[in-house]
Amino acid sequence: MSDENGTPDTPAGPTATGTAGPRPEPLRFFGTTWVHHDNGYALRRAGVAAGSLLAAAAACFVLRFAYEGIQIADSGAFVSLLVVIMFAVCSALAFGHTWGGFSTRPDPERQSSLRGLLAIGFVGSLLAYFFRSLTEAPGEGLHRKEYEQAREQYERRSTRRTGNPSKKKRRRD
Image (cartoon, rainbow, N blue to C red; front, top):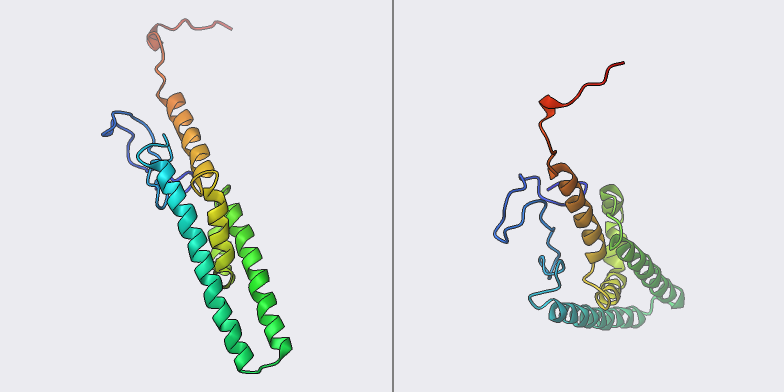
């Protein structure tokens, strides 16, 4: 895979579909159906939206049990408030990071440094996935832009010259 746009580095020859050039990068849960919105794309989007919302609701339910455990432990109001604020802030940051990742490729170093924050704020990531899947497949806009740029570059490289270059008239200076 090319690091820049995610298209395969293999030579661009005719594929099973008969088209030559770069191939679209598959998306999680969607494969390459995002290119032409075929093969159950709308159903997949509805399923992803419902699944991510259901997972976020289940996660909030589990977090409620964790909060009740802190209350039972009688650790104090300050600790309870701190835990709620921590999950709220981490979820908001995870939402923003995940949402931004749908339009630009995230920096791998920054991604690895935020791994803990994203794990704590997983509810925000699930909600970002839900909201994005209401309008498009999550990451579709980024992949479509990169795929169209790769197709455009391929078309420019593969256009044939006309005429015989050896018979080209030379300019006299």
